Amino acid sequence: MDTPHMADFVCPVITIDGPTASGKGTVAHRVAKHLGFHYLDSGALYRLTALLAKQKGVSLDDESAIAALARVLPCRFVHGHVFLDEVDVTDAVRAEAVGVAASQIAVLPAVRQALVDLQVAFRYAPGLVADGRDMGTVIFPDATLKVFLTASAQARASRRYKQLIEKGIAANMEDLVKDLTERDARDSSRATAPLKPAPGAFILDTSAINAEQAVAQVLAWYAEAPKP
Ligand code: CDP
Image 1 (spheres, rainbow, N blue to C red):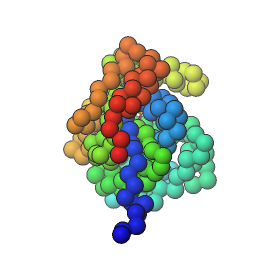
Image 2: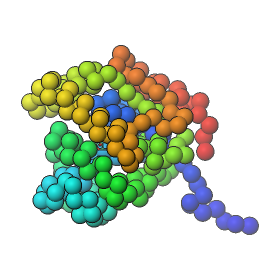
Image 3: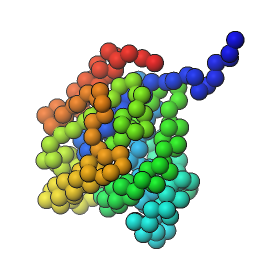
């Protein structure tokens, strides 16, 4: 009789994809906490790669040089903090400019490919909540539950505005709406892994509901989903 292999054990994954400032991060994080699952912030990997490229003076359109950085990304996630080499870059990676740079390098197929194994490695027992743009379409197509979280551009810009002001970072609504509309266009129109709902994804519009209600809806869908 065959002995079971670790690889035979498929643990549950909930994917939460959607545009910038749709509330994915908050919802994914809370759902993971509620279920005792691990949490993958895939956007952080694109942000870390962009930050590293900037630090090393690599041009943001040099696909092979950036893919080489991404393949051996020296990052660690410890208790909500993100480290690049030994430096705590938790705040630095969240800067708007780094988000914009992340969406520029995210169009490069070799960079996306270089980050696949790192993302898949986050799937281990008891389960994973993965937040991003292509979690349900590309990285975890066999996910237990796929959610596409969205909200109007106005609702998303005012959320992002509040977050920045709370952190003491100067922000301007007009610039934010412009940035996020441009980022949406770039994320949705790129040839590789464009932002779109995965087949079978549940769509959740958070324009008029709060994070708590969104979390409750995702947990209710998960409770109903067939488990692996
Ligand atoms: O928090 P926010 O939604 O602004 O950004 P993020 O999730 O940290 O992602 C930053 C950028 O990385 C996005 O604009 C996407 O271009 C890219 N990204 C991606 O292409 N695929 C993912 N799975 C996650 C992020």
